[in-house]
Image 1 (cartoon, rainbow, N blue to C red):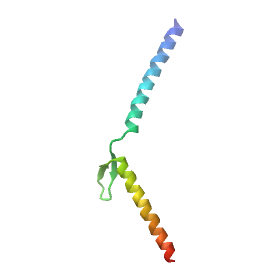
Image 2: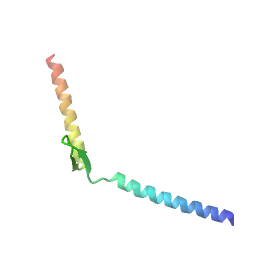
Image 3: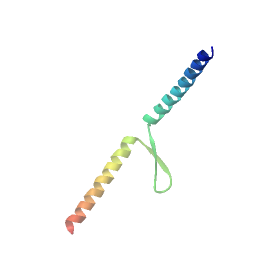
Image 4: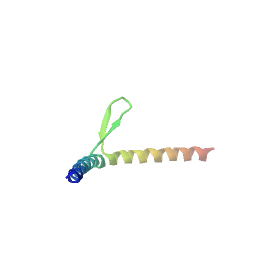
Length: 73
């Protein structure tokens, strides 16, 4: 009888942990918008795709500026 109750309690704990993990993964994997801090102290909500595009553009601008500076030297 003890073994049965022990196994059932482990099953209940496993189900609870599985449910919590699934709900946390759902909220983490699909953010609709990201809060980005602005220089004036406010936050702006934009999509992750826009963040990626802004980062890529800033990186390309920095690479081009560094390349033009070394070409002038």
